[in-house]
Image (cartoon, rainbow, N blue to C red):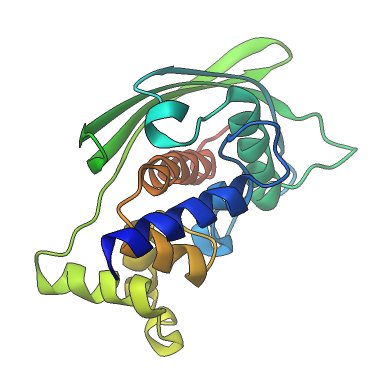
Length: 219
């Protein structure tokens, strides 16, 4: 695809992703985790996100064409938590606070990697009971044959027979940053756009946190 067509596509994509929004703020499906992120979630436990703070290397609208807002990250984290740990009126939810810093390796419009350093704090009855530090990074790896298998699966659509192999599925989900569907997986693999790198790093942080919650002995 020519450079001009790529730019046109990204413009259309950005309008589509942010349509109906008061500002070009990332939100919605691009932050949604694949249902297979966690298949054996604990029962009778739920979480409520009370606060989110973002810092450091955040995207700039005039440079990147979009922004990331704390309210939308809070909403997306809550939606992902509810997906795996559904709310129940009989259960008092644990409160979650998130402080997350960003770091990117990029030059102008060429981005190589986006990293996050997240501090998740869990409260029960207003008391801090656990702090979980999660580091994540999103980049594209295509240099060796193993990476090419996952990158091709993301780009052209993952084969169901491959996906049903547990070891492959685990690696594929990690490679695609636990993306929700094949369409977004293909787009983020093809287009070297900042929004996919930021979204991928955020999803990876969410996924690691949600998986870590399942290993905690909290009551």
